[in-house]
Amino acid sequence: MNPKSTTISANGREYRIPNRPVAVICIDGCEDEYINVAIAHGRAPNLLRMSAAGYRGMTRAALPTFTNVNNCAIVTGTPPNQTGIAGNYILDPETGEEVMTNSSKFLENETILAAASHAGRKVAMVTAKDKLRELLAKNMDGISFSAEKADEVSEEVHGIADVVGLVGPMPQIYSADASLYVLRAGVKLLEQGTSDFLYLSLTDYMQHKYAPDEPESLDFYEGIDREIGQLLELGAIVGATADHGMNGKCHADGSINVLYLETELEKKFGEGCRVICPITDPYVVHHGALGAAVNVYLSDGHDRAAVGRWILAQPGVAEVYDRESAAEKLALPANRIGDFFVLSTRNAVIGRTPEHHDLSKLDGSLRSHGGRYEEMVPLVLSEPLNADYRARAAADPRNFDIFDFVCNGVATS
Image 1 (tube, rainbow, N blue to C red):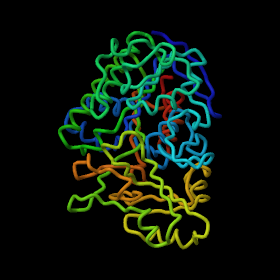
Image 2 (image 1 turned 90 degrees about the horizontal axis):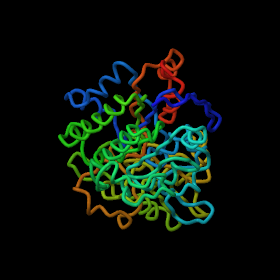
Image 3 (image 1 turned 120 degrees about the vertical axis):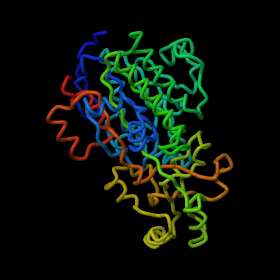
Protein backbone atom coordinates (compact mmCIF):
# COMPACT_ATOMS: atom_id res chain seq x y z
CA MET A 1 0.00 0.00 0.00
CA ASN A 2 1.43 3.38 -1.00
CA PRO A 3 -1.15 6.14 -0.46
CA LYS A 4 -0.40 9.49 -1.98
CA SER A 5 0.66 12.29 0.32
CA THR A 6 -1.93 15.05 0.36
CA THR A 7 -2.55 18.33 2.12
CA ILE A 8 -6.08 19.03 3.27
CA SER A 9 -7.77 21.88 5.08
CA ALA A 10 -10.42 21.57 7.78
CA ASN A 11 -11.79 24.34 9.99
CA GLY A 12 -8.89 26.70 9.34
CA ARG A 13 -6.13 24.12 9.85
CA GLU A 14 -4.00 22.43 7.25
CA TYR A 15 -3.06 18.76 7.57
CA ARG A 16 -0.21 17.26 5.57
CA ILE A 17 -1.32 13.63 5.49
CA PRO A 18 1.71 11.31 5.52
CA ASN A 19 2.58 9.06 2.63
CA ARG A 20 1.71 6.09 4.83
CA PRO A 21 -1.48 4.69 6.33
CA VAL A 22 -2.77 6.60 9.35
CA ALA A 23 -4.71 5.15 12.29
CA VAL A 24 -5.99 7.47 15.03
CA ILE A 25 -7.55 5.70 18.01
CA CYS A 26 -9.78 7.14 20.71
CA ILE A 27 -9.48 4.75 23.67
CA ASP A 28 -12.70 5.76 25.38
CA GLY A 29 -12.30 6.36 29.12
CA CYS A 30 -8.55 5.76 29.10
CA GLU A 31 -7.16 7.27 32.27
CA ASP A 32 -3.36 7.26 31.87
CA GLU A 33 -3.06 4.84 34.78
CA TYR A 34 -4.57 2.07 32.65
CA ILE A 35 -1.59 2.27 30.29
CA ASN A 36 0.89 2.62 33.16
CA VAL A 37 -0.38 -0.49 34.91
CA ALA A 38 -0.65 -2.55 31.71
CA ILE A 39 2.94 -1.70 30.78
CA ALA A 40 4.17 -2.40 34.33
CA HIS A 41 2.60 -5.86 34.17
CA GLY A 42 4.16 -6.61 30.79
CA ARG A 43 0.79 -6.62 29.07
CA ALA A 44 1.34 -3.75 26.62
CA PRO A 45 4.66 -4.20 24.77
CA ASN A 46 3.52 -2.25 21.72
CA LEU A 47 2.38 0.76 23.75
CA LEU A 48 5.73 0.56 25.56
CA ARG A 49 7.53 0.51 22.21
CA MET A 50 5.51 3.50 20.99
CA SER A 51 6.31 5.36 24.20
CA ALA A 52 10.03 4.75 23.75
CA ALA A 53 10.45 5.09 19.99
CA GLY A 54 7.70 7.60 19.33
CA TYR A 55 6.07 9.93 21.84
CA ARG A 56 4.03 9.55 25.00
CA GLY A 57 2.71 12.39 27.12
CA MET A 58 -0.44 13.93 28.52
CA THR A 59 -3.02 16.08 26.80
CA ARG A 60 -6.14 17.93 27.87
CA ALA A 61 -9.62 16.86 26.78
CA ALA A 62 -12.53 19.20 26.10
CA LEU A 63 -15.03 19.91 28.84
CA PRO A 64 -17.45 18.45 29.64
CA THR A 65 -15.44 15.25 29.40
CA PHE A 66 -18.07 13.16 27.64
CA THR A 67 -18.01 10.95 24.57
CA ASN A 68 -19.90 12.98 21.95
CA VAL A 69 -18.18 16.19 23.01
CA ASN A 70 -14.65 14.88 22.64
CA ASN A 71 -15.06 12.59 19.65
CA CYS A 72 -16.52 15.50 17.70
CA ALA A 73 -13.68 17.73 18.87
CA ILE A 74 -11.10 15.13 17.82
CA VAL A 75 -12.43 14.54 14.29
CA THR A 76 -12.81 18.28 13.62
CA GLY A 77 -9.68 19.49 15.43
CA THR A 78 -11.77 22.12 17.22
CA PRO A 79 -13.24 22.81 20.69
CA PRO A 80 -16.96 22.54 21.54
CA ASN A 81 -17.71 26.20 20.82
CA GLN A 82 -16.94 25.39 17.18
CA THR A 83 -18.45 21.90 16.96
CA GLY A 84 -21.60 22.95 18.82
CA ILE A 85 -21.53 19.66 20.73
CA ALA A 86 -21.70 20.35 24.47
CA GLY A 87 -22.95 16.99 25.69
CA ASN A 88 -24.40 13.65 24.73
CA TYR A 89 -27.75 15.07 25.85
CA ILE A 90 -28.91 18.69 25.73
CA LEU A 91 -31.87 20.98 25.91
CA ASP A 92 -32.32 21.86 22.23
CA PRO A 93 -32.44 25.69 22.04
CA GLU A 94 -34.56 25.55 18.89
CA THR A 95 -37.31 23.29 20.23
CA GLY A 96 -36.94 23.39 24.02
CA GLU A 97 -36.94 19.58 24.02
CA GLU A 98 -34.45 17.30 25.73
CA VAL A 99 -32.61 15.45 22.97
CA MET A 100 -29.54 13.34 22.32
CA THR A 101 -26.92 14.91 20.07
CA ASN A 102 -26.48 11.83 17.90
CA SER A 103 -27.63 13.43 14.65
CA SER A 104 -25.10 15.08 12.37
CA LYS A 105 -27.37 18.14 12.27
CA PHE A 106 -25.97 19.10 15.68
CA LEU A 107 -22.36 19.12 14.43
CA GLU A 108 -21.77 22.66 13.22
CA ASN A 109 -18.46 22.29 11.39
CA GLU A 110 -16.71 19.87 9.08
CA THR A 111 -14.51 16.90 9.89
CA ILE A 112 -10.94 16.03 9.00
CA LEU A 113 -12.27 12.64 7.90
CA ALA A 114 -14.56 14.21 5.31
CA ALA A 115 -11.77 16.45 4.03
CA ALA A 116 -9.37 13.49 3.70
CA SER A 117 -11.98 11.44 1.87
CA HIS A 118 -12.69 14.27 -0.57
CA ALA A 119 -8.95 14.53 -1.23
CA GLY A 120 -8.87 10.92 -2.35
CA ARG A 121 -7.74 9.08 0.77
CA LYS A 122 -9.53 5.83 1.57
CA VAL A 123 -11.14 6.80 4.86
CA ALA A 124 -12.75 4.47 7.39
CA MET A 125 -14.44 5.50 10.61
CA VAL A 126 -15.34 2.65 12.95
CA THR A 127 -16.97 3.14 16.35
CA ALA A 128 -18.10 0.78 19.07
CA LYS A 129 -21.30 2.71 19.82
CA ASP A 130 -23.68 3.36 16.95
CA LYS A 131 -24.68 6.71 18.50
CA LEU A 132 -21.45 8.24 17.13
CA ARG A 133 -21.60 6.93 13.59
CA GLU A 134 -23.76 9.59 11.96
CA LEU A 135 -22.01 12.43 13.79
CA LEU A 136 -18.47 11.41 12.93
CA ALA A 137 -19.24 10.36 9.36
CA LYS A 138 -20.82 13.70 8.45
CA ASN A 139 -20.22 14.46 4.76
CA MET A 140 -17.58 11.70 4.58
CA ASP A 141 -17.05 9.45 1.57
CA GLY A 142 -15.82 6.05 2.63
CA ILE A 143 -16.55 3.37 5.19
CA SER A 144 -18.37 4.10 8.44
CA PHE A 145 -19.99 1.58 10.77
CA SER A 146 -20.31 0.58 14.40
CA ALA A 147 -19.48 -2.66 16.17
CA GLU A 148 -22.89 -2.40 17.83
CA LYS A 149 -24.71 -2.72 14.51
CA ALA A 150 -22.11 -4.55 12.45
CA ASP A 151 -24.77 -6.88 11.06
CA GLU A 152 -26.91 -4.03 9.70
CA VAL A 153 -24.53 -2.45 7.19
CA SER A 154 -25.09 -1.67 3.53
CA GLU A 155 -22.83 -0.44 0.77
CA GLU A 156 -25.14 2.52 0.21
CA VAL A 157 -25.22 3.81 3.81
CA HIS A 158 -22.01 2.46 5.37
CA GLY A 159 -19.70 1.99 2.38
CA ILE A 160 -19.32 -1.71 3.13
CA ALA A 161 -21.57 -4.68 2.51
CA ASP A 162 -20.41 -7.33 4.98
CA VAL A 163 -18.67 -6.48 8.24
CA VAL A 164 -19.43 -9.74 10.01
CA GLY A 165 -17.85 -11.72 7.18
CA LEU A 166 -14.76 -9.53 7.38
CA VAL A 167 -14.29 -9.16 11.13
CA GLY A 168 -16.38 -11.88 12.76
CA PRO A 169 -19.60 -12.18 14.80
CA MET A 170 -21.03 -8.95 16.17
CA PRO A 171 -20.06 -8.33 19.82
CA GLN A 172 -22.22 -7.39 22.78
CA ILE A 173 -22.00 -3.63 23.35
CA TYR A 174 -21.49 -4.13 27.10
CA SER A 175 -18.26 -6.07 26.71
CA ALA A 176 -14.54 -5.73 26.18
CA ASP A 177 -15.02 -7.22 22.74
CA ALA A 178 -17.07 -4.22 21.58
CA SER A 179 -13.87 -2.15 21.63
CA LEU A 180 -11.55 -4.89 20.40
CA TYR A 181 -13.91 -5.50 17.47
CA VAL A 182 -13.37 -1.90 16.36
CA LEU A 183 -9.61 -2.39 16.37
CA ARG A 184 -9.82 -5.74 14.59
CA ALA A 185 -11.98 -4.06 11.95
CA GLY A 186 -9.33 -1.39 11.46
CA VAL A 187 -6.66 -4.05 11.05
CA LYS A 188 -8.74 -5.93 8.46
CA LEU A 189 -9.56 -2.79 6.46
CA LEU A 190 -5.90 -1.79 6.41
CA GLU A 191 -4.78 -5.32 5.59
CA GLN A 192 -7.15 -5.52 2.63
CA GLY A 193 -6.11 -2.12 1.32
CA THR A 194 -9.70 -0.98 1.63
CA SER A 195 -8.69 1.96 3.84
CA ASP A 196 -5.55 3.95 4.51
CA PHE A 197 -6.87 6.71 6.82
CA LEU A 198 -8.62 5.35 9.92
CA TYR A 199 -10.43 6.75 12.93
CA LEU A 200 -11.22 4.05 15.49
CA SER A 201 -13.37 5.01 18.48
CA LEU A 202 -13.77 2.51 21.33
CA THR A 203 -16.24 2.32 24.22
CA ASP A 204 -15.62 2.79 27.96
CA TYR A 205 -17.69 -0.05 29.39
CA MET A 206 -14.58 -1.73 30.81
CA GLN A 207 -13.21 1.47 32.38
CA HIS A 208 -16.58 2.20 33.98
CA LYS A 209 -16.60 -1.29 35.43
CA TYR A 210 -12.98 -2.03 36.35
CA ALA A 211 -10.09 -0.11 37.90
CA PRO A 212 -6.69 -0.19 36.14
CA ASP A 213 -5.16 -2.93 38.29
CA GLU A 214 -8.04 -5.40 38.09
CA PRO A 215 -7.40 -8.57 36.03
CA GLU A 216 -10.19 -7.72 33.60
CA SER A 217 -8.56 -4.39 32.79
CA LEU A 218 -5.16 -5.99 32.27
CA ASP A 219 -6.67 -8.53 29.87
CA PHE A 220 -8.51 -5.77 28.04
CA TYR A 221 -5.45 -3.58 27.56
CA GLU A 222 -3.44 -6.58 26.45
CA GLY A 223 -6.07 -7.05 23.74
CA ILE A 224 -5.88 -3.37 22.75
CA ASP A 225 -2.10 -3.57 22.62
CA ARG A 226 -2.19 -6.70 20.43
CA GLU A 227 -4.36 -4.99 17.80
CA ILE A 228 -2.23 -1.83 17.89
CA GLY A 229 0.73 -4.10 17.18
CA GLN A 230 -1.07 -5.39 14.08
CA LEU A 231 -1.63 -1.82 12.85
CA LEU A 232 2.06 -1.07 13.36
CA GLU A 233 3.12 -4.19 11.48
CA LEU A 234 0.97 -3.05 8.56
CA GLY A 235 3.01 0.15 8.40
CA ALA A 236 0.52 2.56 9.91
CA ILE A 237 1.42 5.69 11.79
CA VAL A 238 -0.62 5.18 14.95
CA GLY A 239 -1.83 7.90 17.30
CA ALA A 240 -3.88 7.14 20.41
CA THR A 241 -5.62 9.39 22.90
CA ALA A 242 -8.83 9.38 24.94
CA ASP A 243 -12.04 11.35 25.14
CA HIS A 244 -11.88 11.41 28.94
CA GLY A 245 -10.44 9.69 31.97
CA MET A 246 -12.35 7.86 34.69
CA ASN A 247 -12.66 8.09 38.47
CA GLY A 248 -14.41 6.26 41.26
CA LYS A 249 -17.45 8.25 42.43
CA CYS A 250 -18.09 6.77 45.86
CA HIS A 251 -17.84 7.52 49.56
CA ALA A 252 -15.24 5.76 51.68
CA ASP A 253 -17.82 3.10 52.56
CA GLY A 254 -18.34 2.32 48.86
CA SER A 255 -21.76 3.94 48.48
CA ILE A 256 -22.34 6.19 45.47
CA ASN A 257 -21.52 9.84 46.16
CA VAL A 258 -24.29 11.65 44.30
CA LEU A 259 -25.91 15.06 44.64
CA TYR A 260 -29.42 15.10 43.16
CA LEU A 261 -29.20 18.75 42.28
CA GLU A 262 -32.67 19.35 40.81
CA THR A 263 -34.27 17.87 43.90
CA GLU A 264 -32.19 20.07 46.19
CA LEU A 265 -32.72 23.20 44.08
CA GLU A 266 -36.48 22.79 44.20
CA LYS A 267 -36.36 22.30 47.98
CA LYS A 268 -34.43 25.54 48.34
CA PHE A 269 -35.78 27.75 45.54
CA GLY A 270 -39.09 26.20 44.51
CA GLU A 271 -40.26 25.19 41.06
CA GLY A 272 -38.62 26.28 37.83
CA CYS A 273 -35.22 24.67 38.34
CA ARG A 274 -34.27 22.12 35.70
CA VAL A 275 -31.11 20.01 35.56
CA ILE A 276 -29.90 18.36 32.35
CA CYS A 277 -27.33 15.56 32.67
CA PRO A 278 -25.22 15.64 29.47
CA ILE A 279 -23.75 12.18 30.11
CA THR A 280 -27.17 10.68 29.29
CA ASP A 281 -27.10 8.38 26.28
CA PRO A 282 -28.62 5.03 25.27
CA TYR A 283 -25.95 3.16 27.28
CA VAL A 284 -26.78 3.83 30.94
CA VAL A 285 -26.10 0.33 32.32
CA HIS A 286 -22.58 1.27 33.41
CA HIS A 287 -23.20 4.79 34.72
CA GLY A 288 -26.92 5.28 35.34
CA ALA A 289 -26.75 8.70 33.60
CA LEU A 290 -24.70 10.04 36.53
CA GLY A 291 -21.73 12.15 35.51
CA ALA A 292 -19.48 14.90 36.79
CA ALA A 293 -21.04 17.79 34.85
CA VAL A 294 -24.58 19.12 34.51
CA ASN A 295 -26.44 22.09 33.09
CA VAL A 296 -28.90 24.03 35.25
CA TYR A 297 -31.78 25.97 33.71
CA LEU A 298 -33.78 28.50 35.74
CA SER A 299 -37.15 30.02 34.96
CA ASP A 300 -37.67 33.77 35.22
CA GLY A 301 -37.97 35.15 38.72
CA HIS A 302 -35.02 33.37 40.29
CA ASP A 303 -32.13 35.35 41.74
CA ARG A 304 -29.46 33.81 39.53
CA ALA A 305 -26.54 35.09 41.56
CA ALA A 306 -28.02 33.64 44.76
CA VAL A 307 -28.69 30.29 43.07
CA GLY A 308 -25.14 30.16 41.73
CA ARG A 309 -23.63 30.86 45.14
CA TRP A 310 -25.83 28.21 46.75
CA ILE A 311 -24.88 25.55 44.16
CA LEU A 312 -21.18 26.20 44.69
CA ALA A 313 -21.59 25.64 48.43
CA GLN A 314 -23.10 22.18 48.00
CA PRO A 315 -21.08 19.08 48.88
CA GLY A 316 -19.68 17.41 45.79
CA VAL A 317 -19.62 20.63 43.71
CA ALA A 318 -16.21 21.92 42.57
CA GLU A 319 -16.95 24.63 39.99
CA VAL A 320 -19.95 26.69 38.88
CA TYR A 321 -20.00 28.87 35.76
CA ASP A 322 -22.77 31.07 34.45
CA ARG A 323 -23.51 30.74 30.74
CA GLU A 324 -21.29 33.65 29.69
CA SER A 325 -18.26 32.59 31.71
CA ALA A 326 -18.61 28.95 30.62
CA ALA A 327 -18.61 30.03 26.99
CA GLU A 328 -15.61 32.30 27.50
CA LYS A 329 -13.44 30.23 29.84
CA LEU A 330 -14.34 26.67 28.82
CA ALA A 331 -14.95 27.20 25.09
CA LEU A 332 -18.53 25.92 25.29
CA PRO A 333 -21.32 26.89 22.86
CA ALA A 334 -23.42 29.40 24.79
CA ASN A 335 -26.68 28.44 23.06
CA ARG A 336 -26.43 24.79 24.11
CA ILE A 337 -25.64 25.06 27.81
CA GLY A 338 -27.70 26.10 30.81
CA ASP A 339 -27.89 29.24 32.91
CA PHE A 340 -25.22 27.44 34.94
CA PHE A 341 -22.66 24.80 34.02
CA VAL A 342 -21.67 22.79 37.11
CA LEU A 343 -18.71 20.45 37.67
CA SER A 344 -18.32 17.98 40.53
CA THR A 345 -15.41 17.11 42.76
CA ARG A 346 -13.18 14.14 41.91
CA ASN A 347 -15.14 11.47 43.77
CA ALA A 348 -18.70 12.77 43.24
CA VAL A 349 -21.36 12.82 40.55
CA ILE A 350 -24.30 15.16 40.05
CA GLY A 351 -27.75 13.89 39.12
CA ARG A 352 -31.20 15.25 38.54
CA THR A 353 -33.66 13.54 40.89
CA PRO A 354 -33.59 9.98 42.23
CA GLU A 355 -36.48 9.12 39.92
CA HIS A 356 -34.51 10.15 36.82
CA HIS A 357 -31.70 7.65 37.39
CA ASP A 358 -32.03 3.87 37.24
CA LEU A 359 -29.17 2.54 39.34
CA SER A 360 -30.52 -0.99 39.53
CA LYS A 361 -28.02 -2.31 36.99
CA LEU A 362 -24.99 -0.91 38.81
CA ASP A 363 -23.19 -3.26 41.16
CA GLY A 364 -23.48 -0.83 44.06
CA SER A 365 -20.44 1.20 43.06
CA LEU A 366 -19.80 3.74 40.32
CA ARG A 367 -16.94 4.88 38.13
CA SER A 368 -17.77 7.83 35.91
CA HIS A 369 -16.53 11.03 34.24
CA GLY A 370 -17.50 14.39 32.80
CA GLY A 371 -15.66 16.92 34.93
CA ARG A 372 -12.31 18.54 35.50
CA TYR A 373 -10.81 15.47 37.15
CA GLU A 374 -11.21 13.39 34.00
CA GLU A 375 -9.72 16.09 31.78
CA MET A 376 -6.10 14.90 31.48
CA VAL A 377 -5.65 11.93 29.15
CA PRO A 378 -2.75 10.18 27.41
CA LEU A 379 -1.35 10.99 23.99
CA VAL A 380 0.73 8.20 22.43
CA LEU A 381 2.30 8.31 18.97
CA SER A 382 4.20 5.60 17.14
CA GLU A 383 6.66 8.06 15.59
CA PRO A 384 8.94 10.68 17.16
CA LEU A 385 7.88 14.31 16.95
CA ASN A 386 9.76 16.97 15.05
CA ALA A 387 11.24 19.87 17.02
CA ASP A 388 8.27 22.19 16.56
CA TYR A 389 5.76 19.64 17.81
CA ARG A 390 7.96 18.53 20.69
CA ALA A 391 7.69 22.11 21.92
CA ARG A 392 3.92 22.09 21.43
CA ALA A 393 3.63 18.80 23.29
CA ALA A 394 5.51 20.33 26.22
CA ALA A 395 3.02 23.22 26.42
CA ASP A 396 -0.75 22.60 26.56
CA PRO A 397 -1.71 20.13 23.85
CA ARG A 398 -5.36 19.16 23.47
CA ASN A 399 -6.69 15.74 22.61
CA PHE A 400 -8.36 17.30 19.57
CA ASP A 401 -4.89 18.19 18.26
CA ILE A 402 -4.11 14.52 17.62
CA PHE A 403 -4.66 14.60 13.86
CA ASP A 404 -2.45 17.69 13.73
CA PHE A 405 0.28 15.82 15.62
CA VAL A 406 -0.05 12.68 13.49
CA CYS A 407 -0.20 14.50 10.15
CA ASN A 408 2.05 17.48 10.72
CA GLY A 409 4.16 16.64 13.74
CA VAL A 410 5.75 13.26 13.32
CA ALA A 411 9.36 13.36 12.19
CA THR A 412 8.81 10.93 9.28
CA SER A 413 5.80 12.65 7.67
